[in-house]
Length: 326
Image (cartoon, rainbow, N blue to C red):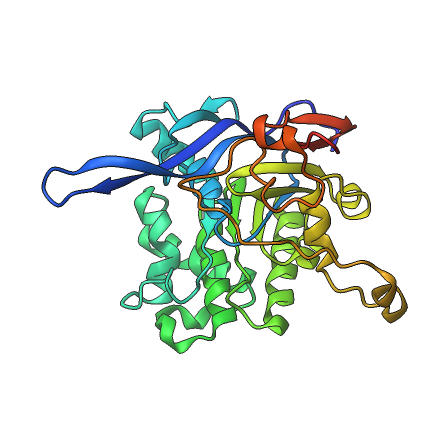
């Protein structure tokens, strides 16, 4: 992607959740450092994959970008408008261009609302169209995500997980947004259904020029859908590179360990390659290690790693890494 101007700019984004103690006189005794000082750009029409272990801050990053969580520090620019300081009215207007597809299709749809009401809710909130136009738009959207438009009066419990996630996609598309955060949209689905949902997202992107932040665990699926990939560990982005660069030439020891766990369909190659097994558990985000956060589990860590936070540097065109010895 050789575009000068990104659609979305994230600068030194930080989100800490306070840890409170005491029943009546509550006082803060610490903070969970869910996201800590991360920066990246997303260009129009591209998909940035965001990967990492459970609890590393991926979903919090997506939600903080959309201001569903207010950032502790840092800035988020969408089309040069800073979201973190925007007024509620301005933010409400900007939200038409930014949507989210949630992780759990069972929890993200209101069981008391019909599919028609769920998908038309964004249109009602933003006063788009008459009642009849909204109904027509909902039927259009259901067709777009390969669901029968006559399902408009059914309830979420009448659908399978994959169909529910399609309803979530239709709701996200209702206001014709430019940017969608896909927050692990396939992790709760069967493997056979995952491919259908990912293919649908790709088709919609090609048709409407959508831009995605695609958050996931599944590295093979991220390789399939993403243009660039960012790897996250304990609230920090440790590596960011174009997809093929990252998968063929990972520079950070954590990325190497993650990729060594991805199965290769060729049995000969699979038997020859080296698996990297990381020692220990992910540290507590309320008390992250000093220096490089990965040093407690890193196979190449030296004393320097315990003392100094590694600089975020560009080692090849577009290939960024935070490691002293990369």
